[in-house]
Length: 254
Image 1 (tube, rainbow, N blue to C red):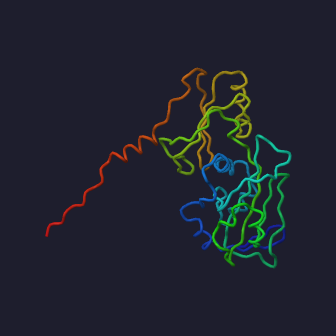
Image 2 (cartoon, rainbow, N blue to C red):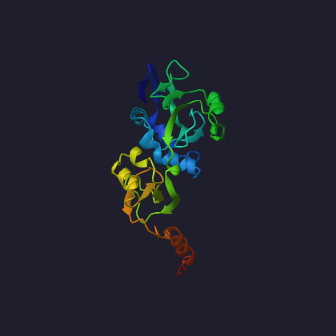
Image 3 (cartoon, helix red, strand yellow):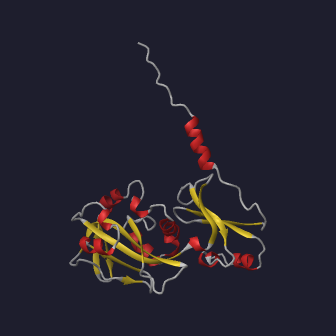
């Protein structure tokens, strides 16, 4: 049982039982593969406060893979370049002498707390009621974060299967496209030299983001068509699978 203190409240977590909840990756409720969920996956590790990431790891939870993730409308004023995302990690444990911790506010748009009141969270977080029945041993680690909206900064964003797995998480899929002229992604990802390339129109900036962890790769290409060829890796793999005849059972000699 791991113990840590959040704003004066002690939280105890059973790491062994909790790890069993996440065997095989995160829940399907974390990623429906829509643009919003994919954007949250790609930006979660890069935009969440470092203190939040540290606390989640101390609890034995993967900061990149919550059990549940949903968009909220708490961002005021509304921003077309950012979204607000609420995430919830399920864990076995208890909050000592309290029902919940105080809300830890990192800044105006980022916060975190631990709660044991499932009925309250069912009303506040969309999709909580679809989860497994309430377990008396569950506590819920909740975060609310402001995330950049990558899909508004890239032209022709589309999902493609990559020839090689991501070196950080091993995932095979990428979100690919070209940065818009006024894209803020170079500023968000700490690549200021790309801002000059875009401003002076020295070429186009092709980008690839890992669909799971958000690792970004880029290259500067000539600003003339054709800008990229169609990626057929996934289609070819499906064709090859359909063309392969099923293995025939081998008759045993008696």
